[in-house]
Length: 438
Ligand code: GLU
Image 1 (cartoon, rainbow, N blue to C red):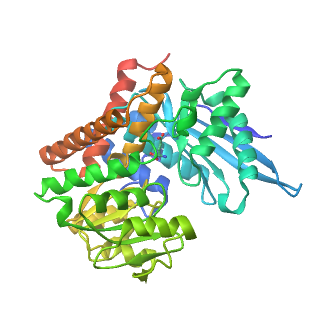
Image 2: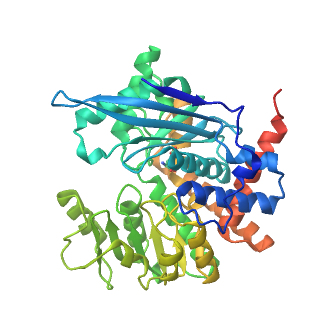
Image 3: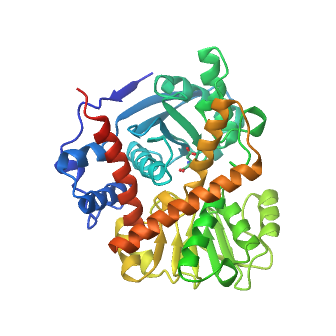
């Protein structure tokens, strides 16, 4: 086993932390996240020392994750957990299993969790974990062993009061059950609040599985209302048909919107007259992909981004709206269901073209909001009704949207800039009020 922990005593110099500006050619997730932070720091007028603190993960661990495969051979993976900031409370954030996972991607995702939790006023910092693995190539029993070994290796860093995990790309409620079980067995008693997004049968919350998607649709409604429109008057294209995109497409259709295109990693389908989303979900349950859905034309992921629709929802991976693809966007609203789908350059192009972007740290915060509800319920061992959860989720999403939209109008900012300013300021204020130790 190799494990390294970087110390909070050696942050990079401010010049390094601030080197990725909005004009940076760096289109990586971390380049994007740092450019966004630099913009917010500039607007807030913070000094280099505070900027460096906000740009630098508080604590990181890298672990080797050996796997005994079902055929008896062994393979080695690398896993990470990054706590970007814990000034406002314990670290909170997902666990990603994907071949793209690397330390910088996890750092970017952890930083976005910090601002996201602050924007929706959760008493959390931001964290993220990942293992560089393509989960589709491994059996369920192999994924269970990877999850349990990864959890054991990062044990010193996590806990219900330290750092709470949730699903992300490539992981699900079963993964969270294995993490929770491994943690609990090692501690000697059951500790449900160490993960969220768990199955209902063992401490999960009603409404968690669809919470991110509901939040995406709540923020869409709010953005449309700013322009005097309702869901029933718009067409929508959704990129990504996983945990976020599939339910979002369903809620859009239920709300009266015309969902004209959706895609997943294998391809997409398009029907200008509107897709039958429940039938599409049944097709995916049967075949594993939206591809081949009858009565619709095939469309690739890139062309979907340039469709002539009112609302575009990137709900897959980072960086899909870069300088070039952003130029082709015809939608008037981009609602970021994914984390970091728009690069800094893509963002500039969209702004120049008058596209309203509801940023990830606001639009997709519904998931972590209900994760917080799940953690509160687990800590109290008292469970709320689905109605209570959905009502409180909607209220939190709408009030966060209202605060961001009002700040944007008052200060002449984009919604992303306003959300970042609010999130970053809340974190910086918590840090400053607590004071610097020693
Ligand atoms: N992975 C989700 C996100 O990126 C959820 C995180 C959580 O619930 O902790 O927001």
